[in-house]
Image 1: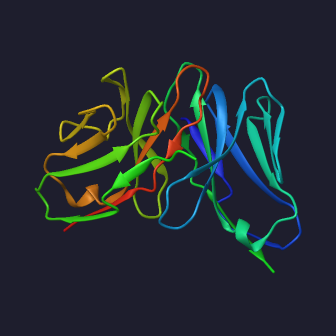
Image 2: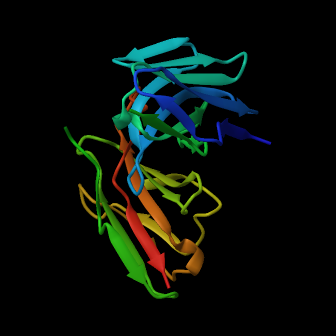
Length: 112
Length: 114
């Protein structure tokens, strides 16, 4: 069956450290993968998109990697801040597809 | 920066009643979506809409659901006869045409069916 899995446990890190979140998928052929941030009771906010033929994308303190052989994407936040505390969602769109299929999300808590 | 907006932010209704959730997508976008998120669960796709017709729908999107773009700016989701299990956050999203794949989400409508 098709699955998108993210760390189910919350990630607790100290301010200033790098947070690394994982997204693994099985039985998908993704055309691209997106990372979103979601705060409690709010809508997902787009962060980064990476296509199947791209290895890495960066935006300010954010970096995403995509390994289609391992079927995995890693999302990094460098120099993390308490304001980065949120749930981070990974979402795929299949080749030829249109809809986003989401993982369950990982809660990140950055402590000062 | 353009945003997707949704109204109302909260809706409480009795089981069996009809509800209409409204969205104003980003103005130059051509693809429109509804997703929902039951409390504590994943965001789930409901339906996509392009060129004035449904392009894809999920198993959740049964005959009780319908979508409409009544004018050039609004995009609505109607639930004809609400059930308790329809209680969720409903998110509208939109994206531009062509190679612009990013979907931008609205803030959501929290629907509570009693």
